[in-house]
Amino acid sequence: MELDVLQHNGSPAGRTITLDEAVFGVDPNDHVLWLDVCRTQAAARQGTHKTKERGEVKGSNRKLYRQKGTGMARAGNAASPVRRGGGRIFGPRPRTYNVGLNRKVRRNARCSALSYKVREEAIRVVDPLKFETPSSRALLTLLENLELTGHPVLIVTASHSPEVFRSSTNLNRVVVREARNVSTEDILRARILVCEEDAFTVWSALWASTSTPSA
Image (cartoon, rainbow, N blue to C red; front, side, top):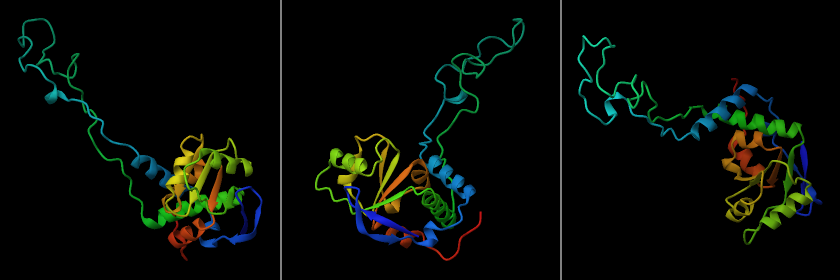
């Protein structure tokens, strides 16, 4: 499959790019998409939650009153979880939520997401974005020329481009990612992908494979 390369003013650049079938022509697997999105979202959790349990609550360990003869239920100290101000039973502790997926499943998830975007005709290929200084106006003008204003857009650069990234920070619903750092969730959240021409070469080098794993 081929896509037209566009100039920054939205007009055709007069050349096309051929998509790698091993990346953009796979049969999408919805299950591995779900697995990889869960992995990404789980890794974003800090896992620093903590509550005090019975042995960690500050206070006296004195028994509140005698065991028998009061007509009330027996009680220990004030740190008891059943009393106000006491510790929490089985409270959360710091932990990691990371989910492990093997490399083939992660690769298949990204390729499935990109294949969906190709089927939806939701990929635009543009000339390299060369910003000498950060400029939200220049990036917004590019989106206006491509008629993408107001849509969730993922801009993919072939290499690290801090000027492009900083240009997007003031633009709503616009995300900039380097090609090698694009996640499955990034692709699925965006309605349109605006990719530099060389980004496809990076993806082919990273994710092209002769075998597609089943999951």
